[in-house]
Image (cartoon, rainbow, N blue to C red):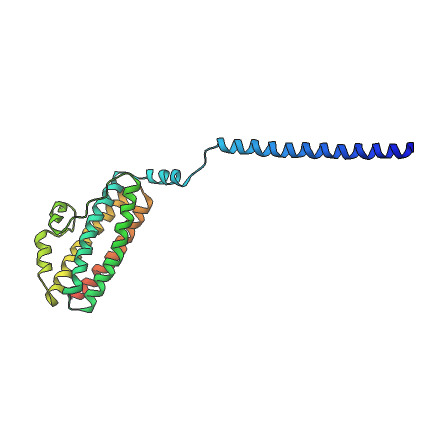
Length: 213
């Protein structure tokens, strides 16, 4: 009987020790996690908005001017391209106009997004009568130029479109080169490089269309 009682006490002691160990481990584990969680709560985390703000801050005045001016410049090119739908006679002119619109519309949206992220105003979408307000930009057509283009059709339109768009593209390339030299925001400088490459190729195409290349 005594041996039996000793065995019972020994078993209870071992079991009790095991329970205490489990409780301590559990408390230690929870406490460790809590401390970790509290520590993590006190640490600043890079939220998407914070990251966006940091990225948005990495620009300068040249980037802002480039985006604002090129938006207006692109809008006029898109307007000219849209005229080709109903006025151009050659398939090549219509195809080129579609290509120009397809490239520049998304770029307008991209640059508008940059300005918004920088806390800058996106230029108002001015109709044709407002273009002379931007006449200081290289390559921009005057109201009189746009009226001539609108009032032409067929082969006359094709020729006028190519001549005007060459000048327009040359102005855009000039603006893009200035951005590459003076800008700081890498996506803007990359877009400027894309403008130079694409529009240089389109100028060569239009010169061939005119028979001047």
